Length: 297
Image (tube, rainbow, N blue to C red; front, top):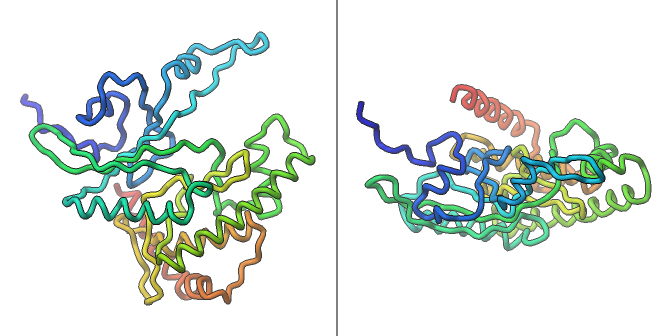
């Protein structure tokens, strides 16, 4: 039976090292190893770029104080391969411009910086534009604004995840919590300024999109899903059907309350509009439809 046409890498649910090094714009003799990151985005393939010597230690282990340990290899960088088709150069440049807008307001302290590349992708006889990003890897743990843990318990819990050897109350934990609250206030202020001045908001709502570091920084790592913010009565959906603008602003209010420790004023114009109970009910219905559609795929 004759083989079918090659499958576009953007259509594959998952890819590994072999698929990456087979790409025409990747050096097949690269010394690095590409491994699927455990958090995958709907909009991108996300690959860890690993040093093979670190991977060898992960697999064979190393002796530490007479005990063989298997430390997980940490990525040197992350490779993002954008799934969406970009029929024209202008569309590709528009995508990069949205990322540059986020950088203008959040880089470098509040996001994982990235070098965006428009590349000539060849698959068989076809040629196409493809967008990739070589992104900084942020060490830390996921900051989930939707967690049921309230603001008094959330940050100490995150500290214990970052510093498992220090799981007790003390001055180190207290200093870290104070630093996260300070950095959290800065993060909230920067996002609000981006909304007010640029009329856009990044996706703060997705699982794993925010990371908190051992230095107390709040860093955005998903920098591709960027929504227009408009006060025109519409509920903006991204190309997957998710109400990303409204959910991101709701997530921002949770970060403000739970992380920055700042009370949320429901009369503040941004929150008064997007957290209005009637609008919130409509957003929840669209979100439920999104998840229903995802379960069918």
